Image (cartoon, rainbow, N blue to C red; front, side, top):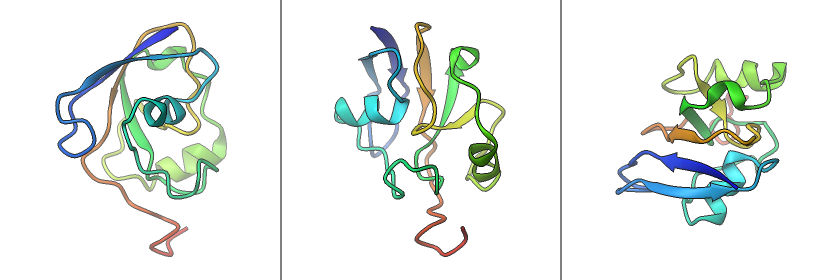
Amino acid sequence: MTQIIVLPHVELCPDGSVIEAAPGTTICDTLLENGIDIEHACEKSCACTTCHVIVREGFASLNPAEEEEEDLLDKAWGLEPQSRLSCQAVVADTPLVVEIPRYTINMAREGKH
């Protein structure tokens, strides 16, 4: 199992959390399985930016982002070089430190997709 440290988020995880992920699973699925209700408006189909996270440590261990994800990330609120859509970021064996941005933009619901 791979350790994921989730930094505090005022609504979803006020105290932060340390959780375990099975390599090969996505960050989004792991968060949801551990009671961290990250938004995923497109049902994890890489069609919105609501599950955007910033990987503060361990970013290089994730599978590379595909072009579709990169295009969507360009529209995400608070984009940083270590940003990923958590529904597309597959956990490997390296521990991760993940930050959930304070805000999200729902591209599907807001008709901007």
